Image 1: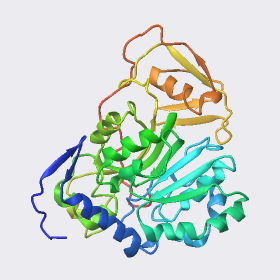
Image 2: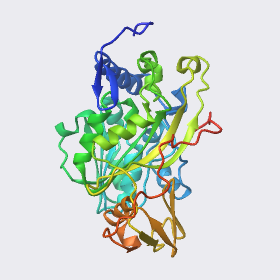
Image 3: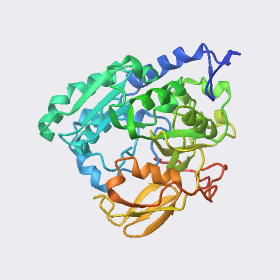
Length: 368
């Protein structure tokens, strides 16, 4: 990698500009970084490769039962795990050594299935080596692993519309063609399915010298999207209303790396994107409301849906048309009472804004 960034020709991929000769070389950087340079999570030089949420207390016993080699080869922290996974078909993008796959397989149960995809043979070898161990421990075998690039999901043996949930933990930023990833997983989701994922975002478009730096890229910073470009890409791929679930500012404390990013600010954020054709590109008001039944086992009193919607059991709550659709057309439907229809439009639902959506105070230098 040259010390001074050359003047690459930029190509446009949706809203994501990628230096043309850089794409294949950065994929090689990622494969080498996660396949050979890192031996455990302690080798990471920053805390950016983390989701915004700590592992819930109830899931820690499930993680404790995983094979130690699988846990040791996990390069991140926290867990990307939406509720209501029993019986679901789940796809994990960038599964690495399989830690999240084996955790999710316990939640999906014998009637569900989890497929992990990764492009790093060394990581997949670890994941596959312990399939029999986990099947014996769980009492069922519902896991499989595929080697491939998440930018080329159409080349893998995956059924279109065959997945209820797709997850990824700090992986989208490592892709050199984020538009292709989003389009590919949109094709794989069934109607009403969702992409629930954590990633790193920036408050501006990053310059080439940051985007091409091998350590910054491998540590999930160089490939971070400007948050507004991410929203554009998601909508272009058919996810009309991306919902921010949680977020946290990141502090770059590594003394050799911090000066390289300049004034750019980074955020770890979890989003959920629903594959629902009827969603609009704005929150419209149709006078609808929902009432949470309190029947999600992990949330009997309050259900966090996104950053702006926390549903209290038994309490009727007005919602926009998109939120109503997300709940009614997804696996959440049995857990809500629905009132209203789309017969009367009342204009834009109040509260829709265009400012940066992330919390900007108190950057975290620790595990995000």
